[in-house]
Length: 115
Length: 109
Image (spheres, rainbow over the protein chains, first blue to last red):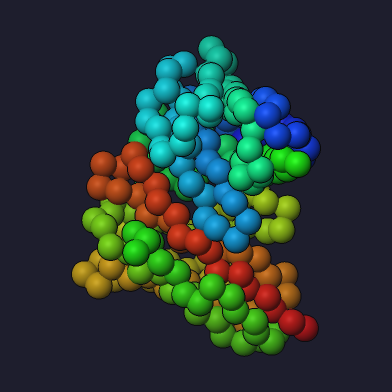
């Protein structure tokens, strides 16, 4: 049973560039949530995708956008990268938009470094 | 003030010691999760609590809903327990997770 998978594992970009991160949810899950975790901080909610639409959004600028595909996989896009976007980007999956009474399932994250 | 606060931020212990990590929250919740994050970044779910106490191996988690407080205990700690432990609360709608900043635990042999 495949868990949540993310790619790439590491990425180095330059200020002003654009980046795309990818996430495949755990088998049987249809909802993907994205989080940003700065060094030494807890994860911060970016947005959640369900039925190919953004359902909830945290306090992140429009430079952060996403997409969900019919197979439930998802992409996170960040435009006009800033140094402050350097972080670990985590993807979590669930069945439905609520987290329910089940454990949380996270991927191993993509570590983005902006220089 | 953060909605979820953990203490301590950093904890260093000797192998075999009993460890306690605390989590306090200020909002109504439907559940509380304890998570473990290793240096590579991946997060593993340890416990989900809505009341009482749960035990898994050397790990014990408790929650006091009235006091809005939870604790994670590790008995007979081992160097492989070294990781960041994160508390996350699920709001009453069941749709929003809020995370604490984590506790970095180092267990020395």
